[in-house]
Structure formats: structure tokens, C-alpha cells
Length: 396
Image (cartoon, rainbow, N blue to C red; front, side):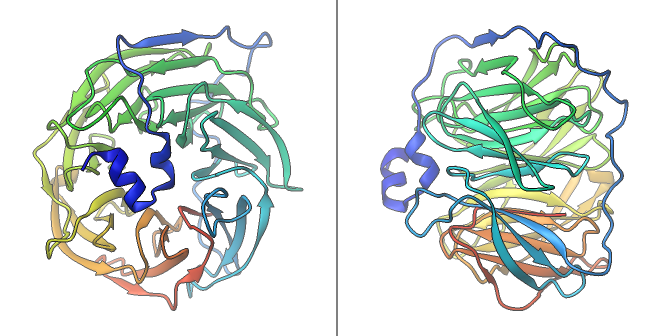
């Protein structure tokens, strides 16, 4: 069964955006903003959040156009000790905000508008004011991240297989797009009709930005011009044909990264060279799914102490626990734990690493687990929290 047919069968909201843009890579550069932005800081402009007594915010993304979906981005509260989630309410009525993130300074939230005419939207958290939306130049944006300098927003268009850059001004609002790159080379992998950019992130050293493309079985490395917001490709890393890479998570020291391959149900340890930006994909490993279940790995997270990694498994509906060994060069599968939900689309750790959240798309729930900091063992923190078509949960 091809991916389009499987999309109709499974009802994956994002798969309605399977695009068909092939050929030579197209690069569109838009002039930089007329007013120069401030010089980037050498380090992110924030300190890591630490768990404090009292409730903390949990931002939730959904599909507004899906049956039973929410009305936009919502915000709930969670207790950093017990893990209990309460008091969800609307933050902003954004169409299909399937992925959200927060600026490093904690003042502004960004969400994708995962629609055919894709966009990204900024929301000032104080006062819950929508600061406006900007076109991503493609269809079905499904991921976004903020450059550590806080000056650039990176987004990935799944449907059209492209990545975009927008400037962020001092208020947190977005300027006009400064770069758009469509992945036209290599050719789409087996069973794919075109490129499908799934993630766009910055390397831990801040020197390069990397785009994971499920359709071309490739992770692209770019150098971001931090003055003009333009992109220059410097290397490509290829998985096994048909692997369908979806999500890359770096080890904190920046020399290794862990790749979740959606299509062939595998994971891989990658090596990364900060000097050149070159990523090298290692041999496929088990996702921990068993019993003949059709499974689609979604996302890795790594604990703050770098000792453990967790993987969301959609289909097997579990979290796989790995020991991180040899200073990050090796993942050793320890076990899996059911998420008590259906189709865990996304994982997130609380800032102190003591709670793990899973956004379970098909059961419309968010599950929470206590993380044993000595063993990495997971223990459910009560019953899952009801949240309409939960596809993203971001705890601060």
C-alpha cells in the first residue's frame, strides 16, 4: 500500500499534504529586512528552566480541522512534582497548530499553521496577543524551531518538501521570509512521490542548521547566514533507501545525534562534525517495537544528564528506553513501556528531566511519566489527561 492510500486508511491529518515537488533543488532568497537586527549573542539568551514549586505551563498543539480537534493552541498547568495536569484553556485560535515551540527568552510562542497554504504564527504569552502570521512558502508545515540567538525562526514544510527562515524582531514578531529551499536532490526514496521536510533544527554548537527529509531519505546541513537569514547547503547525510527519517535529536555534547526512521521502523546513531557540519548516519537499530505490530517511530528525547534516551513508538504505542553509552556513541535498548494512549506523536521532557510527556494523537490524551534519574525507568503519573487530538505538548 502506498503512503497516500495508507494516509486515507489511517486518517493521518498531516498526510493529506503529501506533495509532488521534484527536480533540481530550488533556492529562493528574499532580501533581508531593511532595518538591521541586533548582533547575535554567542550563547542563547536565557538560562535553563528549573523546576520550582507550584504549577508550570504546558502548551498543547492540535489539529483544528480533524474530527474532535481543538480550537487552536491551548495552555494547561502541570505540577512539576506530581506530574498532574489541570486547567487547560485556550491560548490562541490558530488553524491546525500541530507543532509549537517557545522562544528562548520565554516570552513568545510560535506555532505552525499546518495547511495547504502554510504559515507560522507568533503569540506573545503575556496578554495572549497574536503578533501575526507569515507564509512559509510551502504546504503542510509540521515543525519549527528558534535559532539559539533568538533572531531566526526555522520551519519545515512537509507537503512541499521545503525549509524556510523568518527573522524574529525584538518584540518576538516575525518578519518576511528571508530564505526558502526546496529539496530536489536526491530523488525521492522508495514509495515517495516527492520530498517531505519533517524537521529543521540548529546544531548544539550553533554553527549549522539541519533539515530532516522523510521523502528523500536525507538529512541536509546548511550554514545559516546570521546577518541576512539565508541558507547555503554544505552537506547531505543519507539513510538506507526507504528508511524515511523523521526526527533528529542531538546528544548534549553535540558530537552524536539519534535519528528516528518512520518508514522502516528503525533508529540510528549519527556522528556529527561541528567544524564541517557533516552528519554520518550509522547502522539501523531496533525501535523496540515487537509482536508484529506496524510501527512508526516518531521522536527521540535525551535526558539532561545524557544517560538515557526515550523514543515514541506510534502503532506499538510505547516509549522505548535506551541507555546512552560510550559518551553518546552507542544506544542500548533497555525496554519499552505502554503509553496508555493511542499513537504517541510527540515526546517532551520537563526542564529538569524528571517528567516525560507523550502527546497521543488518536486517543486525544497526554500521558505523563515520572523518570527515575538513576535508572531512567518510567512510572505513570496518574491517568492520561484529555486534550483534543493531542499532537504536541511543550512543558516549561
